Length: 436
Image 1 (cartoon, rainbow, N blue to C red):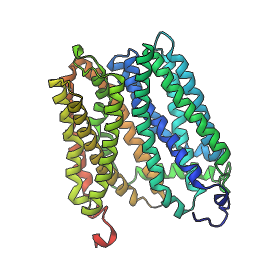
Image 2 (cartoon, rainbow, N blue to C red; image 1 turned 120 degrees about the vertical axis):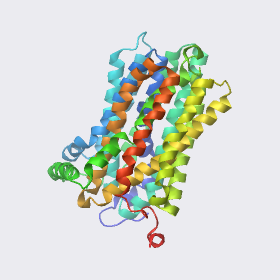
Image 3 (tube, one colour; image 1 turned 180 degrees about the horizontal axis):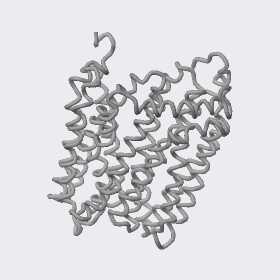
Image 4 (cartoon, rainbow, N blue to C red; image 1 turned 90 degrees about the vertical axis):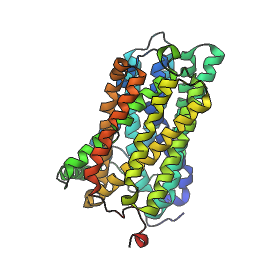
């Protein structure tokens, strides 16, 4: 690996020792809090309205994390924030595992998960910041794919493996609470081991000092925040960020409940192990594969030729849930196939969202990073707000009519894309030589 200037620590502490584990620790808690909690709350007795509201609320820290990002520059180093957050999350996951063994699902337990969400969002800031400080540009580029790979591995392990583990413990013990307690204890152990490992191997970077650039960071943030709302076409961009994934934001909250609810209540009646295998493992792999395929297609054809097929890929596969709710098939192959189709389409369609936000950030000058963070936060805010009401709507409509309602909610996705398409060059995404 290249080592330049003051980065002497890279020679002593190879990034291979900490980059994979740091981004595994970034992806794991997010997967638990964004997806696993949906099925966890459902199996512990929450109705769909409560489950959708609280699990959507857990996403808000990622929407607003740019607001406290400059604080990490003022107090302590990014290395310290990263390790402290990992150990604190381990302690809270262990505490949550203990609460699982109680007889009732209390708001206190939800509060613990909310604290975990805040810590996880803060940990993301610290890890991403340290990555930029500790590695030079060449090393950052070299490890870009590696960090993404381990983030995705964490997603599969947590959304699939952790749920399967909870189901296996439930089968042996006869207690769903014991299953979740064991699964969360394993997550706590993994984060604790990573935290202590990082204490030993993560280098102390020369530029990673408390207060360095802190006040300037506050000024830069507010200047970047104000400049974002002065951008050309900001209104149509805001509508796009808030409404492009409004159908998926509601489907994602209710799909897990639909799979877990018994057939007598209109669900598919999957066990925890089946859910972890079909949705948490094969569904995630299909989602990631769709993202890779989408990127390859755009790199060869460009934005202009692919944007509308990608928008269709995001929305039209939602029809598989209309079929599942009507037919209630018993075949796990059919259910798994429908999940794979919908998740693969979502992965493809998300490429369109990424292209439009990246193009919007390209003309942001020195505020490119700030504007991209703001756009990401606003998009998560839109997902959270829509997700909060999805449970109430489903309980009023029932599963069949709710999934038809989701299909209607795909219409805004097309409408808000129409005005922003003209702001993106048709050859955006092509290699420079091919664009020319």
